[in-house]
Image (cartoon, rainbow, N blue to C red; front, side, top):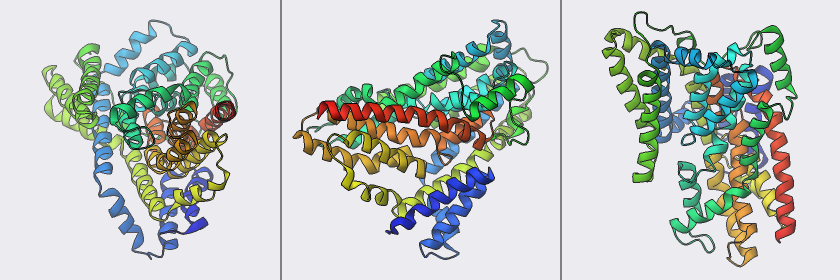
Length: 465
């Protein structure tokens, strides 16, 4: 279906309402309802859209992944592992700067999953961050900026496999091995991802001072001791933020914290190497089961373990509800041709020298409007890459590498800061931040990095054409 300019309406309604009402669920639901009416599907179009979008393997996967992550975090809380980890870190007398730097390093360490990374960093560092009077907005920004921007630059992630897979058959790229080689060569040109990660470190070290809404949030936390603004609604249930440690057991940081994390990393990375597919959901399921067994051996009653697991699942429900509507809106925008319209109105602007920067901007707009970086890659890569190969005579040149990286970086920009994006939601969840507060404080930083990236792409286009 091609609705032309009307195809922009659902995404625009969702984004505008989210900023105005601060209620993401309501905004997404209204956007979906308006979208199905514009598509001529009537009142039944809304429930039918939900059935079509949510009755898929991809949504089932992230749904189960969220549940198992919720269980694991609840187990961390109930065993006292996170609290004990916080005490250990407190003995090091970390300053606000060092606390932010530890969060930054943790995010880069968990490079294999852009879903786990923000949840892990947020839930692990939240207590420590609160004690250091760091706003939840700042913690969610750090967690968000070290998830997708890192994952898109590491060759042993699902992102790398997916992007390189899209490149096979384009120009001189004739095999998966060659495609992965080109992907690796393009990494230095992924200016947005590189600068996003670097920007966090510079902000944390105060080389770049906080500005915009983030500055106000940090001043509130530091001067008033309020890590959340008055009236904020943290995107995590009290089941995960208020779970007390079980009395009568001595927390073992290795068994109750580091071992489950190592299990997740080992299974995710190991299955990627052996099967070319990181079994992240299965990794969390395994870690949750093993930690549950350890808890029983430590003396925690079976009924308490099951109650904790259920509480963990309930704690991530706010995020799951938002993700459900985001998936529905993504399916709707795909059906009504939102991305195709954005591409069609920009085709006449494309010239060899402007190709990298225009590609980045188009990918960023599509990803921001749909909340999907992978969907953006699938749309923009088959359009931009054959075009750049046409300019270079099917040779892999700097212009080709920069254009590939521009698709990746543009997709990450939208995925990184759109209120509709799953990783943005997960960053708010992990840090227990108000979702729209996280989006509002992060966007000025993301736009700053995107503007710098555009300048670099302009320079590359001018110099290497």
